[in-house]
Image (cartoon, rainbow, N blue to C red; front, side, top):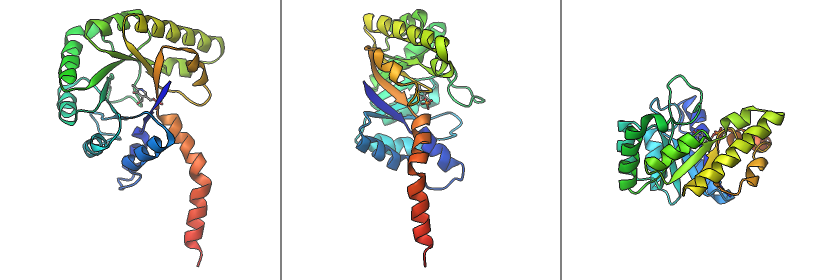
Length: 235
Ligand code: PXP
């Protein structure tokens, strides 16, 4: 199973002060050195974290870029110009803290088919970020998407037996999706604690993880950072 690292929240930290640092491009280099398979970045309509310039710089790097975006005209235009290797189509609401729920592919077949066709023509491999249901998997096949990313956010928010049950639902969905010819990814809300159960689902090829990696990195780097500042303050 491969790891895609979502580096949006490096940009969140930068945008909080509108500084030049921390630079998502440097974060991407760290992730690749550590063994990440791909770098994921979400260009949102409100540009709350990643900016257009970030996407241009990431697309120019020698890496497997997975661009998350809503299936809107502006984003499709940008993606067709930048031609990232992969696109993940996600639902987007201005007021949400993060992507809530999967994309309703079944409820918007013509628009999704058109978006997938345009992005595929530009050379991008398109995945649909969906809830783990048969209806959304069938709809993803119907519109010609080669990949689905199963939403693990609900699983991540549960505990105990309810979480085990949701893990089973994700496993069943992964098996079904693979049986109808889709490449299967998963992500959202995954942490060091809840990721291991995903490894029992053989059809999952890529896990996309962001927030917990960035949060973990803060504490893994905090001591060194304070030492560096103390050294800098020594006369
Ligand atoms: N996959 C998709 C489609 C997402 O939208 C996100 C969040 O941007 C992730 C994976 C990563 O989620 P998290 O940041 O919770 O690890």
